[in-house]
Amino acid sequence: MMKNFVLIFSILISFLSCAQKDNSKKEDERFVDILSKNYNVSLIQLISNPEKYHNKRIQVMGYLHLEFEGNAIYVNELDYKHSLDKNGFWVSFKNKELMSKAMKLNDKYVLIEGVFDAENFGHMGMWSGEIKNITRIDAWGNTD
Image (tube, rainbow, N blue to C red):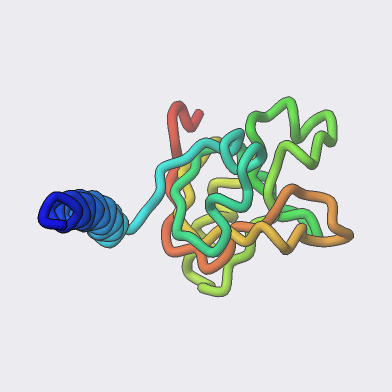
């Protein structure tokens, strides 16, 4: 009888120890998420795993092209020039100051920070998602 009690007690302690380790790992991951605020990802990662980044703050780099009903960031300039819209993401600016800054960076490589929406595909559903609530846009690389 005592052997059974010791065995059950050992299993219970082992189980609780494993559960505690898993729980602390989740807490650590949440802490890292809070500290990092931005997920520095590539546009290719967003295309490949949109559900992983849905409604999360992200930071991406790509080729920006702005036009009526066609504001988007692409993996590269050739994707824009060859209308490979699925290699791009609709971008929406609510902040007029950021939109003005973006206009100066039109047809250039940029870094953008915003929230990724895997369920909105922009005008006519042409792109692979949307980057919205943009809080930062800066030139990236050679801006000549």
